[in-house]
Image (tube, rainbow, N blue to C red; front, side, top):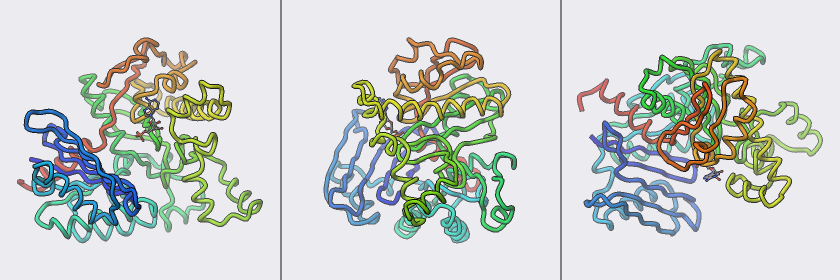
Length: 402
Ligand code: AMP
């Protein structure tokens, strides 16, 4: 069985074809900067001899429908069958499932209505996810389609972790609570950690750090998430590429009064002009590290603030879990930056967290351990699309005989 995993963002369409049940990648395609003059299509696949091939093309792509057609055309040119024709199931990533979804679901009209209702909670993400689903349901009606939610992994949060101390009506009438995001990534880290340790998820406690352009931490006790750093939206928690993470909410009132800023400006400032970019002008950690080594003080401070915030969450989640067995780093920065890992883990000996410097500096790409004390410190390759494929496969296998 083959599953096509679709991640439809506001200006991008990413998709992967996976061979199940092992979730082997057959094809990887992305169209970015949709709607702009310099849209870019990239395609990677393995040919019949098993060699890796790839192709890129820069040309305007007007919308998501055109993006799907472009990928098909590129595949045909490469002598391959369009991925959708090969797919037995289409799995869609949906960022926000609100309180309605605690796991993957087969999409029908009722599910579409429920996802539509969550758009008010995630106006920056869900409408684009929904548009991708609508497009695929219309174009490929014969293929079962599954929605997999980033919030679902955090459904197990207890009320003391998910409620905010704000007027109770905000929760009851307006859905104001912590939902958490990056669920596919944290679930994948949990799955890969259990496989690596050869132990069931229920037998260990884990702090998972997803450090990419977006960033979040999750405290996972015996296989269930009990706290996470992102909140009602992905804005809360760690310092990110362009998002502020935690701030005093009164900063918004102050800036509205001081600089006469309106709500959309405040929303844009915290989502797109803050985080590392706000601190030092770049959201690319590699570039910031280069600048820091050449004496750029703003870049150095930005990295210090970034790592300090992560360290605070590691401390907080150690207190939440009581005992930590594994600290895992994943995503672009978590997997690749030995110096960020070293800065985060520095002076945490009293928690049993100590890095082995030589292992930390290795550039192996499989799951690997890099500690020299009690708490295992793992570097885990991010595999959100693989997790989506596995969850969709399990969902369809449980509900039908495909
Ligand atoms: P992601 O969102 O997971 O693709 O991660 C993107 C972030 O990872 C960017 O800030 C990149 O600069 C960062 N990144 C990727 N490779 C490295 C590396 N070798 N060292 C430091 N940061 C990296």
